[in-house]
Length: 368
Image (cartoon, rainbow, N blue to C red; front, top):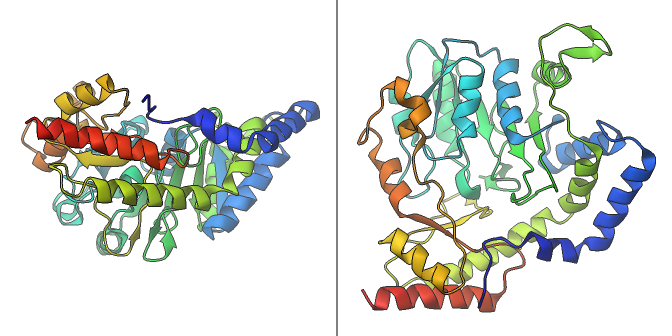
């Protein structure tokens, strides 16, 4: 049996008529950048997340960069984030000239450990970027308490967590800003790049709206040095169609994750942990597997595609050698990176496929 890691075409087939119609309408309109679909998508996202402002940008990385810029993070400032995440979480900090500071992660949730965050705070610390990794919210009560105590900003990296909840609040809505990615593989993914910043702060929202269009509120008049970070109409139209289904799709992911949990319960692998008060949306279903690389190779031979997120923690990346971290400094992230293996999971994956994946994992460990 051949099982892809993610089948985007299968999802498209379920909403093909709506998508084709939405894209066709944009093409016929002749309006392709920052048009009515972008505005309507922003309004619909603001309503879905129950926030005042949803500002569409070009991608999730830009959402982080524009948030940092809008909150006046400048060269020399320090921003604390996780070492176990996609590179953009730290890259955005570096892009505004600030210094990324890495705090180790919780071994169960893989999210940044609040107790270790506080130890990293210095007089130069200005913000924290907690990442809701794989679709599970970070410990936001602790994050907000630390921020209030030390007068810091919180920028939520919710790029993998659309629709996730922390104690009844949607991920991304708790800090000063929340950042989302609509990369095609995300739970809410476009057919190209896209991103969004959300906030309840009127001043921050206005600054981000300026920054995304070259620092301009009126054509050819510029009050800030900005960026070219605009969402196009076709992506907005596609995302408006998909937004109607996101809760149902997330529910399907949770149901299928639970099936994996049940089938893998008595194996040597550790299945994902869902923290109390957390509503995990399983952007990735990631196990901790002994002999991870050997298991991945075995599954590939059986037609099962898997993914490794993330093989090298950010503090050990070559580009960050200048920060002075060495192996052993953040042992939990380093250990997780050697064991984490993500299994096929999307709303369209069948129970039969999940059962096949689980049976082959069981078979692999039987022979050990």
